[in-house]
Image 1 (cartoon, rainbow, N blue to C red):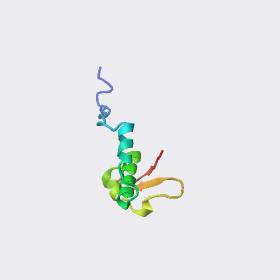
Image 2: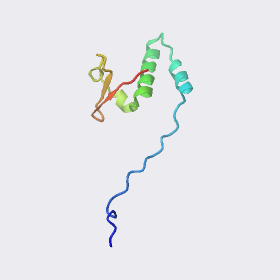
Image 3: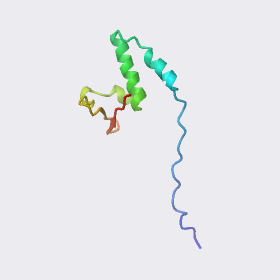
Length: 90
């Protein structure tokens, strides 16, 4: 008698996610930029987008204005992977 599942490959093994920031650490990071300057607002926008969407840095730096939906949907079109990610901000 042969094994009926011998030719079925194993499921992919999930890899552990590296260390992440605690809520307090993340809040301290987001509180750090001086929002009374252009560069501070820019830095806050970058950090907020990275923290709340999971977008990669390369994908973030590839964004163009038409890739961002400002009409209440809150979607960002990530062209590097050809997917649309909902932007979830709290």
